[in-house]
Image (cartoon, rainbow, N blue to C red; front, side, top):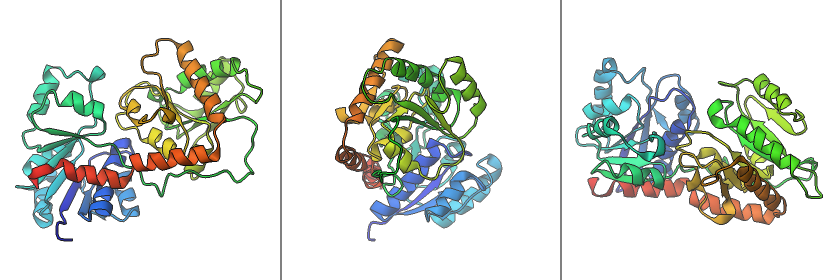
Length: 367
């Protein structure tokens, strides 16, 4: 391709986190949509290395991004000769100032202080990033806040999701029609708000007045900072029935799209974080409306009224429970065509193709 560029992605993230997802999606979007060559350099043995190999990226892993590895990184940069270097906020961001010479350098911003207000030390730290040509934020809200403290271009580019992995799966008729499921999908961790979700679902079940069976809460995720037994104990303490009112699925999940498609609501009750709203986007791409807590960038996924609701600006637990109940009832009355149309709209909004186009546009005149 005549205008093909070489992009070198540096990622120090050790976990299969949303930042890892963003880096992988960026590399894939540039290859698929733009025809650019993405070279991916993660930590050796990390989930990012494994996943990058699985999706067919050219992978050149390293043992670390400290000063000790700087000479080998400089040698790698000389061989790659990248037009663009993308780095994602860890120690690779410091190393990048010594790499690539005339390369355009784009830094992803994966953190925002509470309330989006940058204090003196945060402003000073970011102003020392003189080598950054272009800042990339995963939401409009973050980009607007960060633009107040930098003279560099800040581009809001939402995570692109692979529609081959997440799509509406129409029920085959064999699924149980007993109780509609409100699904919370994510690792078992206090920040993900599982206890809050259980409390709100108790209110929803208690106040259910429809003629159909009340919904249940299905918690899906791997055990990390909370164990399954902790969740079970809490369910019993709040006088709900485990296995009936609340279901729990842990470990690796293979049929993610099926679970998300068959949910009546995708619930994201997170108490903090969610700078990248991956799971909310995935629910929508599977055709299921979402109810979100509103922290981080979560509200950014609600690009139409029929995508779901947010707890932002709600002051009481009663108001939150009422909103969740409202969306459970509303979604229960939707047809398969309604869900398929939501999936289609979400795929257009959160596509890898759109992410690729926006990434290319963000570099502007620097290429």
